[in-house]
Length: 246
Image 1 (tube, rainbow, N blue to C red):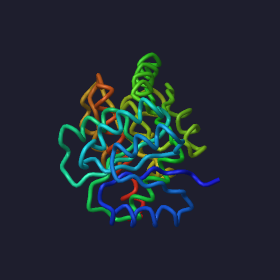
Image 2 (image 1 turned 180 degrees about the horizontal axis):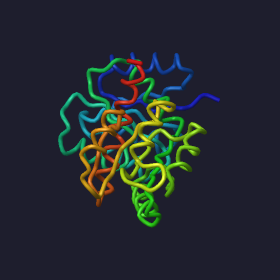
Image 3 (image 1 turned 180 degrees about the vertical axis):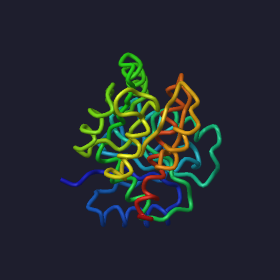
Image 4 (image 1 turned 30 degrees about the vertical axis):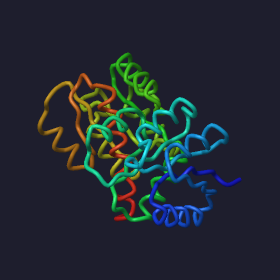
């Protein structure tokens, strides 16, 4: 069965190009020329993913995203924009959007991001303080992300083997296998998994090791959940670019 994509953009030429490429990937694409029309389609039918421009005449993509969250909370949403990370974009990133893609973009990058989102990947939160790990996971889950929590680095690496994890949020300093070692092992064996490091303590040499081994970002504890959701969405938006360069 084809996966059904709702494609929303007021620029007909871009819709035609994107629809053709997504259909080549085996997807069924339903086009909408406005947020208002997209909302009608969401109310009357079922979709596996929505891909929408942000700045459109009438209802914006960000407003449409908020309505979509109410109607289809499990449906991943990818947004596109030709504008800088202004407040409306930041709000979408912090509200649980899967990724925001910057125009102009390579159409293949859009297809890769959509395919990634359709797999419904999971964010894995790893912190040796078990209560903190679960609290962070619960907060991200409330925003709309798929999340699991673990308190052991070795167990986390075993969990990543099944390929459903695409983001690993890991505490920098842990007993046993440290966060830095997790990042290093991800680079060696699971380069498709993005590491985001969190730390209560500023340990420059460990941070440098983590970043040198491909950590996407380092956040200081306590982590504000919407800020973490934003970094996750930014990492997912960049992942397609990394895949193309690989």
